[in-house]
Image 1 (cartoon, helix red, strand yellow):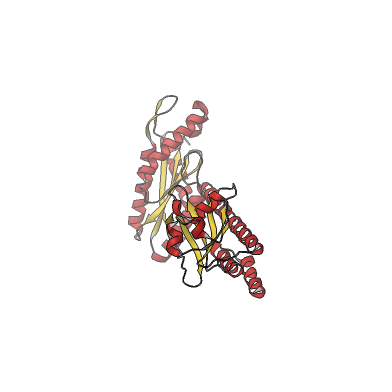
Image 2 (image 1 turned 45 degrees about the horizontal axis):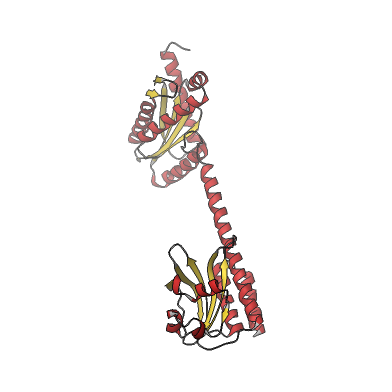
Length: 337
């Protein structure tokens, strides 16, 4: 038996999952105690339900995995409340228990599985139809095994919390703090995905740049908080205008960008890209009710190009060059150089 226990101990030491830990522990507990069934449960106190997570059964007694029972009638509840971890005469002490009567339980052993704060979250149990004497070595093993399971569950919860936190941080790293839109990095990643798809199916990708001319002056005159409010309102309008057919991002300051899939034909794709840019510019311009005053903003410029078979940097550069030409034309039209 000691050799088998040693092999099972090595399994426990190498495990990475709760199931991988529990199953050899249930086997070891059965060998050390002689109990017919050993099993691990979880307890949902909010619904007063106990569930068997993993079990090991020998002989006629069968404790099935997934079994759910009402907490109020369980031997585990009686054990926790009375402090009796091992009972060898269940019929005499807990004779009114329906569960004990149904399974003809005579010997019962249990240890609580606890969270880090000490709250009971489950039990490690064993039962037998025979009257057994559980020696001190087996009782100690029961408590040690329950503690090992508690620590493993806590470790899994910590890993899960860290994973969720990292996922949240990764997501936040792709979000602009002011507008809550995707940021430059997020748009570059989406643009890369769209360009990869276009290289296989022959379609085009729309890349649009929207420039809110005079935004810096507005922010300087009205204050930083008003500038942020204006950007958020612009973002909402342009997001609505983009109709969800692509990704709108805030590049910083008064600059936004859009990337979305287009048809395969160049003429139609170019027309669609220009149309998207016009809709975004029109959405950004108009009346705004800001914290400081009501204002009309009519200086939103946008340029859209249809691209394929280029890199992300090249695609953005083409859109930037078009925006530069649009700005120059606008300055000349206003009498500038």
